[in-house]
Length: 322
Image (cartoon, rainbow, N blue to C red; front, side, top):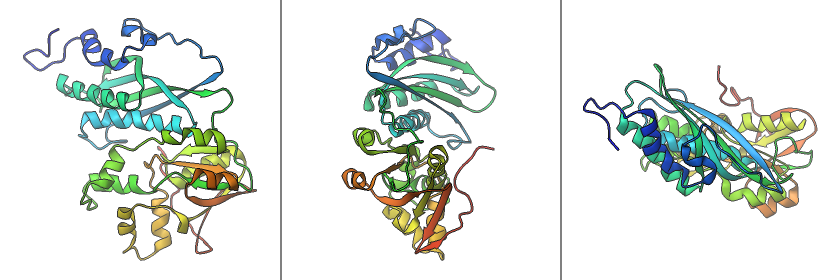
């Protein structure tokens, strides 16, 4: 097969599919070698198919000029985080990419290489998709499929008064990581930038979620905002205690000089891009899960936030698109 021509222009669409994307199927028979305009997925008796879709636009979800392999890996990982929140096992994905005019073949190779790395790491294969051109920024969307045993998907709608609110790990690193990537925050060892660029979907919690969680969401928009999604879907109120918020050592270092600790913790809980999980579970399950408890579920509606027993007013609960 030929590479890019002397001008650096990529080869034709179908050669790109063969060279860049067919290897990403990892031989999955459902993908039909990417030789058809569809995939054929047999039913899996005793399981429910879980489907999620997220998009990524340069300059909105990732900084301008971000390395294309990192863009691809983040796109896959953020979708995997949605499956993690459902207690689902990843199966395969469909990809659509709109390339800007300056995307030469090397750029496209880097993007495919990122998907190859994480496809192997998370055991998930490309099943099909589309590539097009755009006069705007790099845009990509991914539709991800996964399986859960029938009736065991963890929804946002099952929280009950008396449940505890739990998070799977440190909160606030994503927002601080963006500031580090933009040069607005010192990040000596690169920990925060890595947490922003390559979040880890919490697929490791799948079995525990299916067994214990009554509701779950991934922390993409911000902890307070995503807790609010659970509250709305379940018809309950969630009360969060900022003093119990788990934070990383770099986040603690950022918080230390803040004049108002409650406001600082509120910002960490509103940043988003953490891709940890916020979940609810009965008190006995919280011990079994071994994860930090940060609040309680009560009768009512919405999310309230406290610190040292006092209610905290949070300027913005999280990220929303205009």
